[in-house]
Image 1 (cartoon, one colour):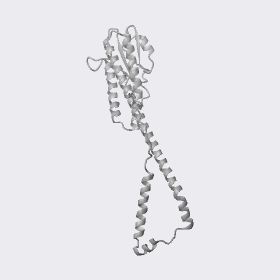
Image 2 (cartoon, one colour):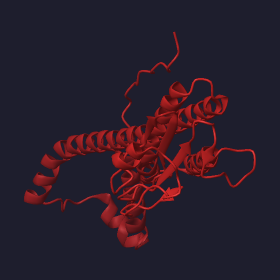
Image 3 (cartoon, helix red, strand yellow):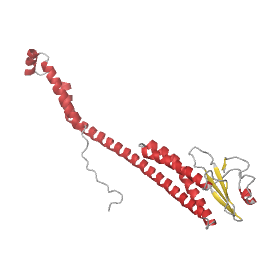
Image 4 (cartoon, one colour):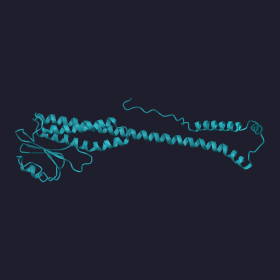
Length: 264
């Protein structure tokens, strides 16, 4: 039975459950839990949660002392709890597909946002069925449901752990890239400072005293025209390219190799 939050009556009036079950229920579903009295079991479980939901949608499952379950399952031969368990598996399948194609910290963070409430709900789902199993140790159907709920909760926990590891890996890679870029810029700045320290005195003297000295290029320039200027310009561009290549070279820092997990 599915119950929306805020309704007045949580249990159907035609259910012949012990009165203490009705007395112990409030106006909201509350947490996932088990109630037991006079051989009756009332199992309260939640719909697979969404990260944006303020309230949880509840499902009530009543087992009479004769072993009859209400409400009836839609599929013949199954318990109604198994249908709810299938909804959890379907949601985990969708989140697993998202984890397979995720390739950025934003995608992994969004995935974790949806996984966190599902992990809590799955664990409480399993714990509730475990208590039901302990209350009815001879009910094999509850045993099978408990085992399926454990497998489901374990699966979603592993998916959340893999997602967190992938997110941490991407964050570490981004941090390493930023560190390498900062180191490269620091080395380039250091090299430029050395070049400035070397040529600044010459440039200062040339600016103060001038460099209009008589040289053979002046006579050759009068004969060859603009050829000398073009050659000097190309030579300057070539030297500038060589200097830029030298400045932009990455620093030759040796990195230590880290052992992988599991290596001896």
